[in-house]
Image 1 (cartoon, one colour):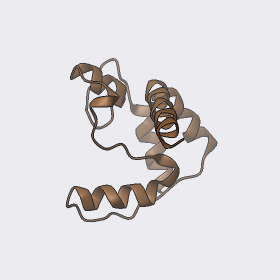
Image 2: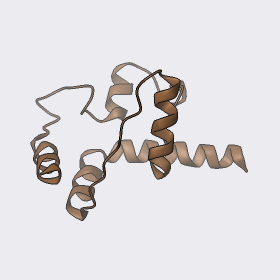
Image 3: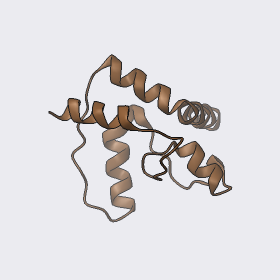
Image 4: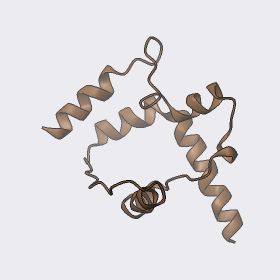
Length: 102
């Protein structure tokens, strides 16, 4: 079951004793590299994830993947808790884009 597997994966993350650039909060990854969000060339906006991810795949010459979503308030809370700084960084990106487009 995809949802059970993903839940188990998220629950097993321990950012104090385990480092993996793929699962670690992106805000920590950027600070470890001594760069900020303004140094990033392309940010995928979550509200339009399928389109944004498809565009990114084309940009990176990658085969487009079929994204699957799980609708669970428990998982949403777990993700928001584990990646709180990432969500704050993401909100900053959205505000910056809104200012540029206004």
